[in-house]
Image (cartoon, rainbow, N blue to C red):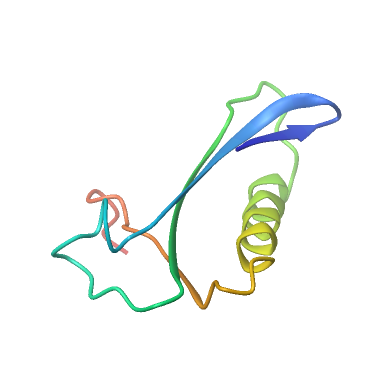
Length: 81
């Protein structure tokens, strides 16, 4: 899915089934699990809170499907937090 800001492409969101791709063998999938990735486009003029708003928009979209019970993601291996 392509997200727009002021009518221009600003982020990308991918929805997937973690029982079949990405997290197979790493995560015990449950009915209603949805996986997602998102990518925010680079900008020369950052907007404070933009990435947080993107995450909120993505989660709202995913949970608008009544079958969605959880959103699971695989962290970047470089993320030590």
